Length: 376
Length: 171
Ligand code: SF4
Ligand code: SF4
Image (cartoon, rainbow over all chains, first blue to last red):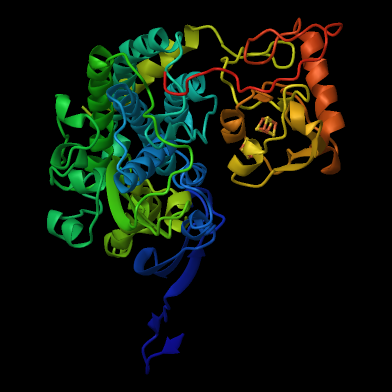
């Protein structure tokens, strides 16, 4: 407190305060830590700190055979394990020159798209949760995720760590009871998405807290290599399923939803629309799926020729890539994972500076990151 | 009009007031699991196992420990006798690679589900414990293996297979 000469007016001296958010914090989606500097309520500086969940997956992959690495990929983005499996087996197949049979490719596409629905359910649910709608909309989305996990349990027996895909195909054919269950789910799912929309899309609280908040311009998004729904919300129609089709995606007819402004609300809408498109893809795949073998005749222990391969897929969170180097042994010489969540986080600081503490949680929620993938 | 969106959402919530609850009262009721469910404990059938150690080589974590020694008359084809066969279930992640690897269907997923123990030691199962669990399963399931095939009755001669089970992994 300073007393100015003669005047009775008091001046308050204010200071910026630094706060640690996380690693143990309900809104940081795992063990993410932000060191945030506040001026009053406004964020002036933010430093993301990660590494709390580091397990050295890339290094562990170097001492496991190509098949055993599949179990490691389950644990990257544990809300979208099927997509991780897919990206890895595509890279390994490229490296070893194995061509999977048609049926396997269709099965994989169905699995990857169901996984996208499940992952977006969680992404949206927790985003709404961060907004303050504690658990009510989240429970609706958990319900559908549960149904998808039941489907996965039918085909591969697990609910989170699937390890379903194999180099050259999948580990088992679709069981008899799977197709009827899938048809039932796919017919119900659009109704559920309508329900989410009725719940949330026009909700005034949601709109006032997300519209025009934290705008990510297309230019900035491209410069920072942001991918996935975050990039598309900024109006860039970049989706690897269309721009570099892998598996059998070029045989399906679907749209890429894009946003207009790139604000938090757009990121929410793009995910919602993508679920609808995924339902369409699964529907078409179900009609087109041929019969035949589900696995190529590949040796159980592959020795790919010396070389390198990179394969990428459009995972629910963005471009997920695996870069493998082979030295003709049974294990990869090097395995590099391009994790979308990690790279999307590079724009976190720019987006959050200037917004208030309450917005910070919401903006961060709209990133839909997964710490298993960020730290790997 | 402000509040219309919230009202729409409330209608959805209101609809759910009148549906039946679908809670399952475990352990009185158990949700049936698919035939491929991987969360069960392993059962291992000593009479089927040849000691080839494929399962141990496939395991990403080195959970299975096998020690064998050659046995039998060289003229009639040697066999392996299993000295040690341990599974450290405490480290197992139920990936199912060992089940897929076994050419003799000697290790199968499908033991008890509610198999909690009080200490880590009892999660380390040696061949006697595994055989006990396998026999318990067979007696409780009308001598059918977890994969649905018929097992020999107890009074029959225990089977000793020398040839891999005929199956095609691609079809
Ligand atoms: S399920 Fe996987 S981790 Fe467990 S013993 Fe078999 S191969 Fe090893
Ligand atoms: S792979 Fe099968 S037969 Fe070979 S040691 Fe393991 S359980 Fe026995």
